[in-house]
Length: 307
Image: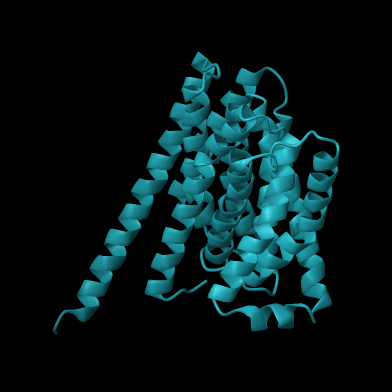
């Protein structure tokens, strides 16, 4: 994949931004849980309020015409329905994990996902990984394995989070839809489900999101918190190799890991060791990337030098 330098830089910054936002998102869900929201109410408000935020972004970007075109493409809509199902599955597992004191296990899932993305990039898109990339993957894989052993059971939440989001990234990379119009369609598909649950919950007197200013603020915050990182991800995923996306994604689970530890989840010796392996792998990858950038810059300087 060739990308102009300015677009590549913007795509890189977008990817970093989305993973930082995702890394800090447990704080939002923990705050909502402390305010009385159940995991299912949080999910319903995510689905409901994401749609108007996505619509606003589409209108601000002047991409409504692309939405109209997308509505005439059944194949693209079918793929987006699948991607909506995958992201809804990912949301559900993640919110349930964070609100049930399993943020560290959720972070494990997002440590696995970059490894999966690198393999998918190699397999589906013929992206190349050099030997240092494989060393980095191997070190991180050891760290992930140790984290799994530390749990004392198969890390089902982690594995399902990794697979659902990895598959989502592949579909969004392939589907014939720009980032914002495609995201809007996903949100519109999920919004009726969220609306239905919010109405039912309000009618039964069990809701917290429609019962006062504080509740409304918590509920509405789910819209931008959900859409903005997804929009950044979808835009960058179409412009960066999956292997690059996979490496940057280590930012999110690292922040999630820190949030989990800061909120009192147990940090065992095995988890500390696994964290060390993962960041050793990240360091190798960064060092290799730095070497490549230096070599590329020197090659350009030699070509530009007067003869």
